[in-house]
Amino acid sequence: MKLIIAIIKPFKLDEVREALTGVGVAGMTVSEVKGFGRQKGQTEIYRGAEYSTNMVPKIKIEVVVGADIADRAVEAIQAAASTGAIGDGKIFVLDVGQAVRIRTGETDETAL
Image (cartoon, rainbow, N blue to C red):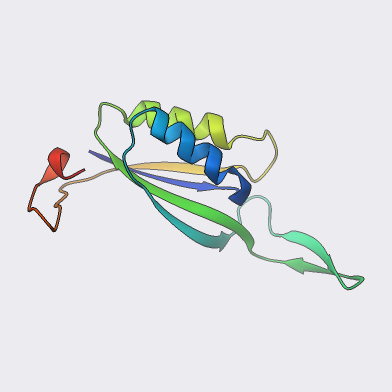
């Protein structure tokens, strides 16, 4: 099993969700986060005054999938989240040692 963590632009969430559903991902966790990378924040104008923000709003998506579809899920996220501009985000893939469905006690792949 693999844990895929994707940090994307907020307006790309619906496209990414549809792309993941298309490759067989049954569920996901979504969080609103803030951070920065090479962008180093952004400049905004509020009531005529320009100011810099150090943190850029992003969406963090977490999905756990079987190892057999992990590559397809990553490709789906990358294709759906890409705008070709700086700040499109990152995707991280980690190994998952165990998963347990609390309600039924199912474990590992059957718990997904």
